[in-house]
Length: 280
Image 1 (cartoon, helix red, strand yellow):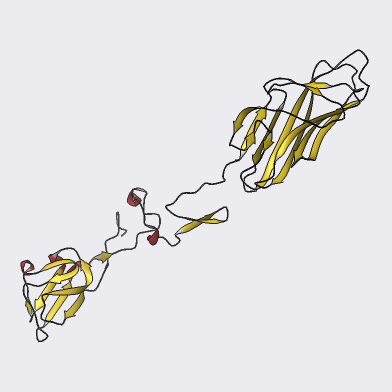
Image 2: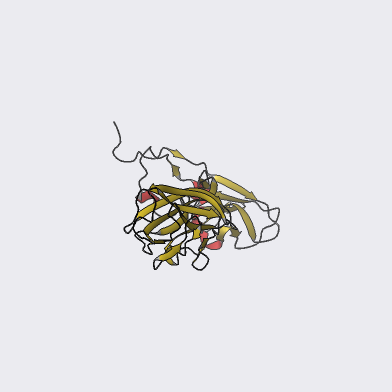
């Protein structure tokens, strides 16, 4: 017949004993740590001692008097004769595990996250953050952008910044080496127009500079003769940057009959930003 509930214990530990050789002292060290005097039975010269005649504290036993080497002293560890039973698979519930479990009780004391060992009970960031990061735009329109000239955009207003963008030099200098996604969008507002002054095939470009040199650009051809609306050029790139590299935003236009151009100083049209790629 099957049992209802937990099966009764059917195995026990053997009673452990210890022989103590007297040294003329009353205090001796036990082989096992015990909690109370009732956990052990003490025999001196074959006479069981009353529990009130000795004291225990962990592995320390203090008798009611001294014993010599000629005395016979035995200790029986009664508290160790407890039943043992291996719990059935799936029988341990969350309530039974309430509280913390020491790392020393676990088969492994650490786990690996992103290739690094993290001690259990400690803390770690999973995945990481896309920082350093920033995004900026210009608070007002920027005019006077000459033809056939790479012009630095003075984007002086930050949307957010983890501390690496300079609003006076317009440089993004990352504090951490790695791969960054960098982007630049330019909203071209107008040319310095006069009827028929712009050739049929004008060219506008957003350009990213790394360490004062052109790195990449995004451009297209504008087939208009008099721009007084808006056109947008865009570029983005994944760039390897170290802590001394810097990136700046540039604009350029050509085939505009020598005229200057103007860009929107509005976040909706013109913005420059970057962020570090996680794990890169």
